[in-house]
Image 1 (cartoon, rainbow, N blue to C red):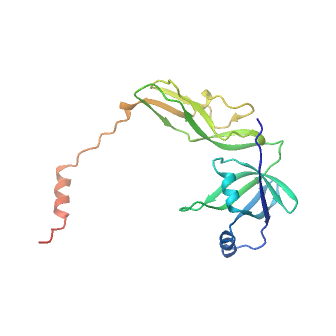
Image 2: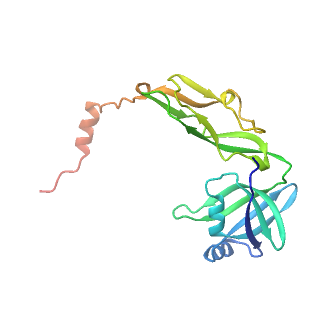
Length: 207
C-alpha cells in the first residue's frame, strides 16, 4: 500500500542565525531545510506543534510542504528534538519525487514471544533498505513466536514487504534468541585489599 504523504503548511524563512531561530521557536515555529536533486537548499518555517505530531513515530515520514501555493514532496531525514521538553527544533528534509527509490534506515520491531526460559537480543536496531519512496515501511517486523534458544535471525531470513530490498549485508545478525541462564552475569566480590583501602580512605565520623 502506498504511503500517504502528510501535508504541512509553511512559509519561506528569510531571517537566519541563532537569534532568528530562537525567535521562530518562541513564536511556535520550527526552522526546516530542504535539499536534494542537485538543487540549492531551501529554508522554511513550519508550525511546530503540527510538525511534531506529523513526524511522531515515523522516522521516514513522507511530507508535502505547502508553501506559497507550491507543493514540495520531501522525505524526513533528520529531526532535532528538544533534549528535555517535547518539541522539534529543526528538521532536514530530502527532496523526492513519487517515482524514485531511496535508501533509508528502517527500525526493527520484534513481535511475539520465544519459548519459555529464553530471551531475545536485538543486534541491529535498524536495517538499511531500498524502497519506493511512496511505500517505505514504518518498521520491519520480526516474529519470534515459539523460537528456540540458539536461534539467530539474519537479514537473509527476514521477509521484507513487496518492493523493499535489503541493503544491509544478508549475513548480518538482527535478532538472537538465547537461554536466559546463558546471560547471567556474575558480580565479582571486592578483594580484601580493596575493602581495606576503602575503609582507610573513609572519613572519620564526627563525635
